[in-house]
Length: 282
Image (cartoon, rainbow, N blue to C red; front, side, top):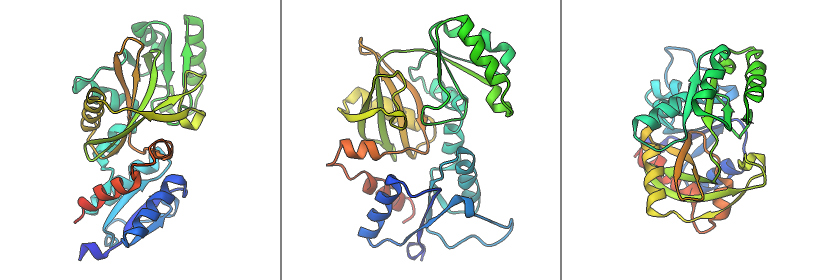
């Protein structure tokens, strides 16, 4: 019986979120084991492990993508799916999916080489934000206010060793409230506003989470954005201007949620995720 096999929590480290998930599985008496993604080895053609499902929380975007690829290919239910992880692992793929779904987003331009980076920035105008195509936690973001600053940042990235780091992803700078909505299985669960003095307000960079009301408009935007990238357990990041306009910035496939859970103590966030995982493997 599939239900007798353990759910496997693949995670690089046991952070607050992983502890919450493991405890929620324990309370339900659902077998769950932790496996460090750095320890995984699979011989192609070998038998699949006897796992009920994989909850993929690898920190590395590269390994996270390959975890979903590998175990989905073996016929195991993986959360999130390979399609979702592929879309969320690249800001280019994510932006294209959001645009295809007709979702509002800041003006965005992409250049495939640093030599064309200036033209990409010109497409969105100043001030602009230059972002790494692959990355999280607000790392590597640069707000540029003029051509000289843009050239300096692009020139620096052109010296990076990886071809991915040389790609230019330029986005219009939008000033507004920084909102994160957790969407699980197509349903918006809760939202927070991330407050801070700096324009980058990720909680990993010191942003302070506080509860945000999930009104119907915010709920619709977040759920549509989650659907656009393939669905699953997702963090949808939005900005809301003083005029009330809302823009979807990106969708995170490896969502951290300790700040959101702390801001909403009445919502059993980990249990909502586990309900979704178990519902997809019953």
